[in-house]
Length: 199
Image 1 (cartoon, rainbow, N blue to C red):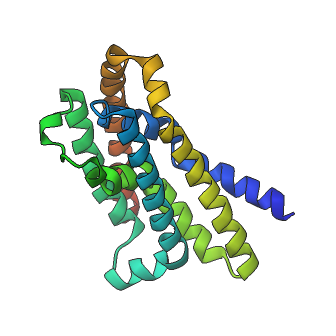
Image 2: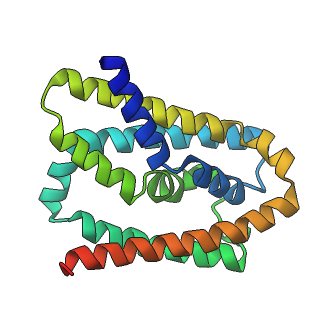
């Protein structure tokens, strides 16, 4: 029973974090970095995602209540941020404007909103609100951490993946990712506006 619950929650959050999309974004944003730098950044991103998702799981509802933030408002804001990111990717990432220390992008935008997006946050809020027993909360948290670690492993070995993709492949991947991201951001914004206006 406990194992099946952990597996089901793990699968749910693994795909909610859109691991392949996160990997493509990671490759695009770190294409000028060395393999060692990518590995260090992957570890930092994973650590921040674990911290952010843990806080949201246990305290998300309280945080949103204190600041008067609704999930729909978050969707609109996150969607707007994602759209700006999409535009920059389609036009071509400007590496000159990126911080010299790649750890600066570990939190924003890699940890949030790319890895921990509105869908993941919404699921965390719902899941956290529905957990009453300490045992359920613990197993849910374990499954969540395992899902984050799985995504982190993909990012850690992104250098190997990059060698197979190639520079030209990354350029194409960047454009396609930007288009998909633009569509995703529009969907998130429209969903937030629709729910906010109760249409």
